[in-house]
Image 1 (spheres, rainbow, N blue to C red):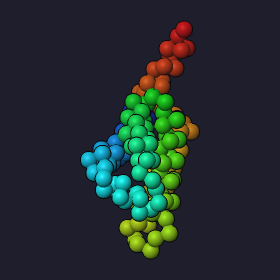
Image 2 (image 1 turned 90 degrees about the vertical axis):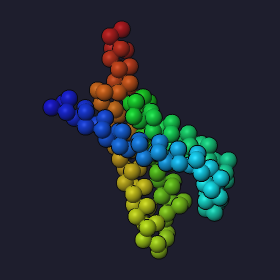
Image 3 (image 1 turned 90 degrees about the horizontal axis):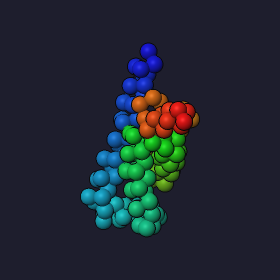
Image 4 (image 1 turned 45 degrees about the horizontal axis):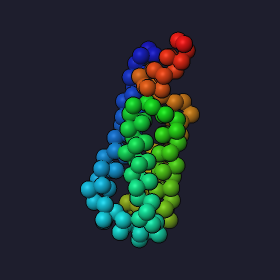
Length: 133
Protein backbone atom coordinates (compact mmCIF):
# COMPACT_ATOMS: atom_id res chain seq x y z
CA UNK A 1 0.00 0.00 0.00
CA UNK A 2 2.90 2.38 0.71
CA UNK A 3 4.12 2.04 -2.88
CA UNK A 4 0.68 3.02 -4.13
CA UNK A 5 0.69 6.10 -1.88
CA UNK A 6 4.23 6.93 -3.02
CA UNK A 7 3.11 6.75 -6.65
CA UNK A 8 -0.02 8.82 -5.99
CA UNK A 9 2.13 11.42 -4.26
CA UNK A 10 4.36 11.69 -7.35
CA UNK A 11 1.30 12.14 -9.56
CA UNK A 12 0.06 14.84 -7.20
CA UNK A 13 3.41 16.64 -7.30
CA UNK A 14 3.47 16.52 -11.10
CA UNK A 15 -0.08 17.81 -11.39
CA UNK A 16 0.57 20.67 -8.97
CA UNK A 17 3.86 21.65 -10.59
CA UNK A 18 2.81 21.31 -14.24
CA UNK A 19 0.44 24.27 -13.91
CA UNK A 20 3.29 26.54 -12.84
CA UNK A 21 5.79 25.33 -15.42
CA UNK A 22 3.23 25.77 -18.20
CA UNK A 23 2.18 29.20 -16.92
CA UNK A 24 5.80 30.30 -16.58
CA UNK A 25 6.46 29.24 -20.16
CA UNK A 26 3.38 31.19 -21.30
CA UNK A 27 4.67 34.27 -19.45
CA UNK A 28 8.03 33.95 -21.21
CA UNK A 29 6.29 33.77 -24.58
CA UNK A 30 4.15 36.81 -23.69
CA UNK A 31 6.65 38.72 -21.57
CA UNK A 32 5.73 42.25 -22.72
CA UNK A 33 2.00 41.80 -22.23
CA UNK A 34 2.63 40.20 -18.84
CA UNK A 35 4.68 43.19 -17.68
CA UNK A 36 1.80 45.45 -18.78
CA UNK A 37 -0.70 43.30 -16.86
CA UNK A 38 1.28 43.26 -13.63
CA UNK A 39 1.95 47.00 -13.92
CA UNK A 40 -1.82 47.55 -13.95
CA UNK A 41 -1.84 45.95 -10.50
CA UNK A 42 1.04 48.06 -9.20
CA UNK A 43 3.71 45.36 -9.49
CA UNK A 44 7.04 46.49 -10.99
CA UNK A 45 8.26 44.59 -14.04
CA UNK A 46 11.58 44.00 -12.25
CA UNK A 47 9.82 41.37 -10.11
CA UNK A 48 8.74 39.29 -13.10
CA UNK A 49 12.02 37.34 -13.38
CA UNK A 50 11.68 36.38 -9.70
CA UNK A 51 8.11 35.23 -10.31
CA UNK A 52 9.26 33.18 -13.31
CA UNK A 53 12.07 31.59 -11.31
CA UNK A 54 9.58 30.72 -8.60
CA UNK A 55 7.07 29.25 -11.04
CA UNK A 56 9.40 27.30 -13.31
CA UNK A 57 12.19 26.56 -10.85
CA UNK A 58 9.78 25.69 -8.06
CA UNK A 59 7.73 23.54 -10.40
CA UNK A 60 10.76 21.57 -11.56
CA UNK A 61 11.96 21.11 -7.97
CA UNK A 62 8.51 19.85 -6.92
CA UNK A 63 8.42 17.33 -9.78
CA UNK A 64 11.93 16.09 -8.97
CA UNK A 65 11.19 16.07 -5.27
CA UNK A 66 14.32 18.12 -4.61
CA UNK A 67 14.23 20.70 -1.83
CA UNK A 68 10.52 19.93 -1.88
CA UNK A 69 9.59 21.67 1.35
CA UNK A 70 11.34 24.91 0.37
CA UNK A 71 9.88 24.85 -3.17
CA UNK A 72 6.41 24.12 -1.79
CA UNK A 73 6.71 27.02 0.64
CA UNK A 74 7.80 29.37 -2.15
CA UNK A 75 4.97 28.30 -4.44
CA UNK A 76 2.44 28.43 -1.60
CA UNK A 77 3.44 31.99 -0.79
CA UNK A 78 3.40 32.81 -4.50
CA UNK A 79 -0.19 31.53 -4.73
CA UNK A 80 -1.27 33.53 -1.69
CA UNK A 81 0.27 36.70 -3.07
CA UNK A 82 -1.26 36.27 -6.54
CA UNK A 83 -4.66 35.60 -4.97
CA UNK A 84 -4.54 38.81 -2.97
CA UNK A 85 -2.82 41.08 -5.51
CA UNK A 86 -4.57 39.99 -8.71
CA UNK A 87 -7.89 38.40 -7.76
CA UNK A 88 -9.14 39.60 -4.36
CA UNK A 89 -11.94 42.08 -3.79
CA UNK A 90 -13.42 41.75 -7.26
CA UNK A 91 -17.10 41.54 -8.12
CA UNK A 92 -16.14 39.60 -11.27
CA UNK A 93 -17.13 35.95 -10.78
CA UNK A 94 -14.16 34.74 -12.84
CA UNK A 95 -11.75 36.65 -10.59
CA UNK A 96 -13.43 35.12 -7.53
CA UNK A 97 -12.85 31.65 -8.99
CA UNK A 98 -9.17 32.49 -9.54
CA UNK A 99 -8.93 33.84 -6.00
CA UNK A 100 -10.27 30.62 -4.46
CA UNK A 101 -8.24 28.45 -6.87
CA UNK A 102 -5.06 30.22 -5.82
CA UNK A 103 -5.94 29.78 -2.14
CA UNK A 104 -6.62 26.06 -2.72
CA UNK A 105 -3.29 25.65 -4.52
CA UNK A 106 -1.53 27.44 -1.66
CA UNK A 107 -3.17 24.99 0.74
CA UNK A 108 -1.97 22.05 -1.33
CA UNK A 109 1.56 23.41 -1.37
CA UNK A 110 1.50 24.01 2.39
CA UNK A 111 0.42 20.38 2.92
CA UNK A 112 3.31 19.29 0.70
CA UNK A 113 5.63 21.55 2.67
CA UNK A 114 4.49 19.99 5.93
CA UNK A 115 4.85 16.40 4.69
CA UNK A 116 7.70 16.66 2.19
CA UNK A 117 8.12 14.34 -0.75
CA UNK A 118 7.78 10.59 -0.31
CA UNK A 119 9.91 7.70 -1.56
CA UNK A 120 10.07 8.63 -5.25
CA UNK A 121 11.97 11.88 -4.87
CA UNK A 122 15.51 13.18 -4.86
CA UNK A 123 14.95 14.30 -1.26
CA UNK A 124 14.28 10.67 -0.26
CA UNK A 125 17.29 9.46 -2.25
CA UNK A 126 19.54 11.97 -0.50
CA UNK A 127 18.10 10.94 2.86
CA UNK A 128 18.74 7.23 2.16
CA UNK A 129 22.33 8.01 1.12
CA UNK A 130 22.91 10.06 4.27
CA UNK A 131 21.64 7.21 6.45
CA UNK A 132 23.83 4.69 4.61
CA UNK A 133 27.00 6.62 5.44
